[in-house]
Length: 133
Image (cartoon, helix red, strand yellow):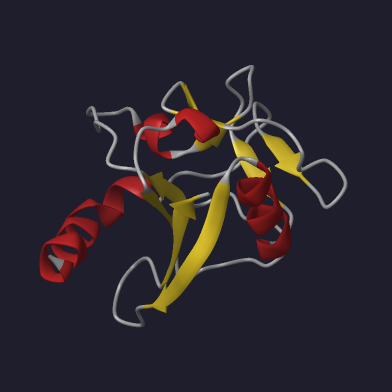
C-alpha cells in the first residue's frame, strides 16, 4: 500500500509545481484561521473519509505555505489542480502563514493530526496525516 502511495505521489508531483499564490488567494494567519474550509467543493468537516493527508514540497517556506496538496482520495480531473487545494466559501485558495496556522485551521475544521512523515527522496518531503475527530 505504501509503495502505491509513493508511486502515485512520484508520478503526479510535476503537476503541482506551478501551484503558487496569486491575487485570488487568501492568506490565513494566526488570528483568522477559524473559517470553514472546502476541498473539491466539499466542506472539510463533511468529507466522507476517516483520513486525509496534507503534502508539502521540499521548497517549504515557513512564512507562506501556498504550494501544497490536500488529498482525501478525491477525483483528479486533468487540468483541475484546484481540486487538490483548500479553499474558502467563495472558492479562493487558502494559503497559510505557518505550519501552526495550518494545524489550527484543520483542527477547527474537525481533523486531528496523527502523524508527520518525512520523505527525503520525494518531491513532497513532508506528509501530514490527519484523522477525522
